[in-house]
Image 1 (cartoon, rainbow, N blue to C red):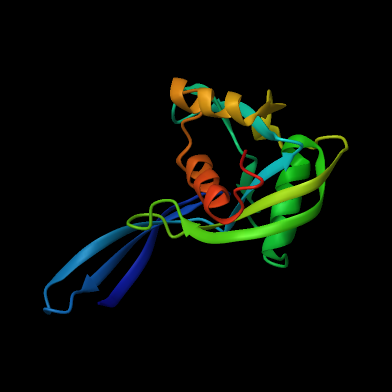
Image 2 (tube, rainbow, N blue to C red):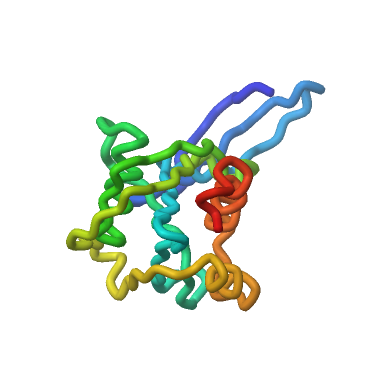
Length: 179
């Protein structure tokens, strides 16, 4: 596939949307709409058979949900993926991890969104002051047993696809941490 042209049709602090004119391998032409966002991190903070989650209002869904701490650093380009993971963990929970274990680099919806997300497990946790961004007003942080986590998934209180994918990766790669 060949990109013939590309134009930004929308941009804000967090994302841009572009429309690409393309030529397929069979020489037919078409368009792709692509949402571009910077690389993000999702962190699974675990200790002592418990997992830490955050709950916040998700505007597009119109409701509050529990999830693993996650996010991206828009407008910054001089950071490592581990720094993003540590920063998001501190920002949303106030937790600092002695160890971060990289589990994978995955995509949310690579048919439309270019954003990769690195999945991390965090252990050796110490509590500090959370530093939420203005958009994260009302964020709540709590720890749960894995049994409570499973009940929250079953009841729909955890509905974030990235949280569920991250949990599956943790269970496959480090079952001793996944309860």
